[in-house]
Amino acid sequence: MPNEEHVALECPCCRGEIYRPLNWFKQTYFTCPACGGGLSADQFAPMIRDIEETIDATIDEMVQGQAHCEGGCCGNKTPD
Image 1 (cartoon, rainbow, N blue to C red):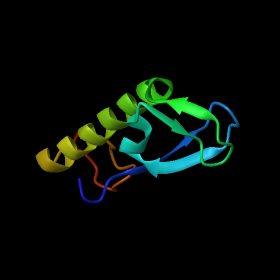
Image 2: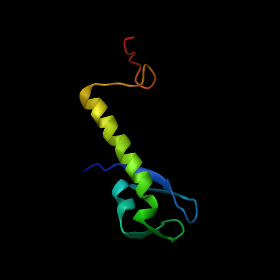
Image 3: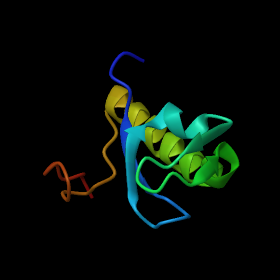
Image 4: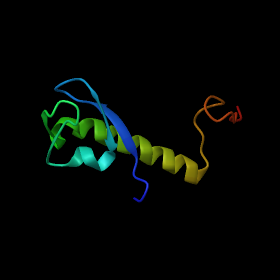
């Protein structure tokens, strides 16, 4: 994906915000850019899975033209 999604997740070591591409958090082992604490993909796997599912659902809605916001986020009201 050329314009990979960036996300901000909290470092479990220092509680600082790590803002990186989604795939960065899937590395086997990496360090927090703020504190240098050792991190692993396992620590972020549940959050990454939820983010990817949300992104996939949003893309599906856009492609299929289904809006579930009922006038909230996009302003389109669904018929009753």
